[in-house]
Image 1: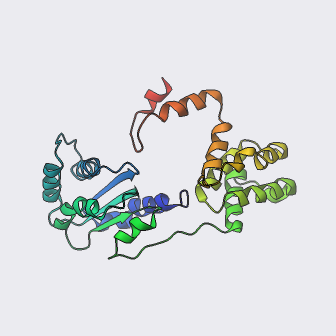
Image 2 (image 1 turned 90 degrees about the vertical axis):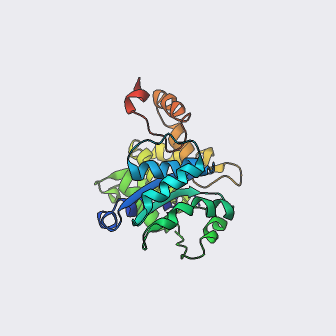
Image 3 (image 1 turned 180 degrees about the horizontal axis):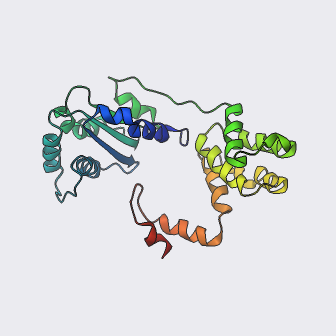
Length: 244
């Protein structure tokens, strides 16, 4: 399930100082549905060496990565993995075998078949938030430090909106930010009763919230958002390039 917090939890572990002190090398690779072993391997290699790599052959990349990992304890995160091909996974992890005992690879996925490929480690399933937790998180982002109980009308509408988030933290956080900019019962009712909630069956639960968030953006930010969409996932660019 998208938006339930898999990447956020992995990122918290990855950036934790105690975790960092336990490993010699760390690397984070965003995989997504467009699986590319060359790109993943290159990303990991450039992370552990802290320098660009011009090698264009996967075999040579793996040889170099294996040497970099030899005898060292590493932590790698492969985020949003979709590929169900066991052979691809076996080939990708060939260089990992040279690492020291205690090395770890964390994989996030919403695909149970992918998770089942990693039979030697327990699978951690993240459950959606309860309705009460959804509302508390929504109120935190919508009201900040203000006392929301002082406005029972907004609280009632907000709790109904929280139900529509289906327990997804990303949806709650996104909507909370939107509501924070519109502290008005009329606006909240408009969001609650928006037709966007009734997207065709089969659409992911997080999508209506993202649509709502985009719908309420100012025109100039919508253009900026569209411009950013031409870049691949996990692409790094200078913010000055976006505002020019």
